[in-house]
Amino acid sequence: MNTARKPLFLAFAALLLAGCATTDTASLSGRTGKATVHADVAYIQAVEKAAKEAGVGVVWVNPPMERRDD
Image 1 (tube, rainbow, N blue to C red):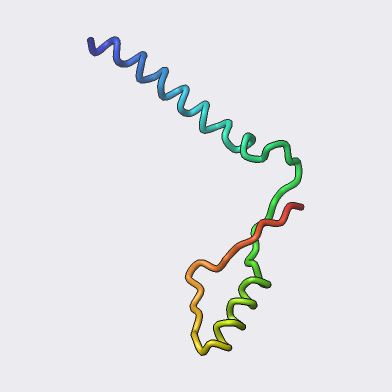
Image 2: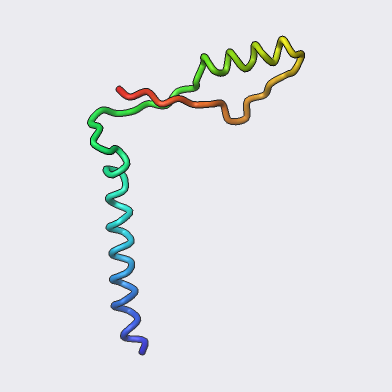
């Protein structure tokens, strides 16, 4: 019984690793350029301006990010 589990486990692990190796290229969906992620400065300024007018302080824990394709 124990000898039957080892090949099954190894086959499952190999399939799992093969699946993880292909996710990087699949997420690009055909794009050849690289994407960069920067803080969404326009949105941050708009929110901080509205907060200042309302008398509220804003502390960005996770600032909004925008993706720019190169």
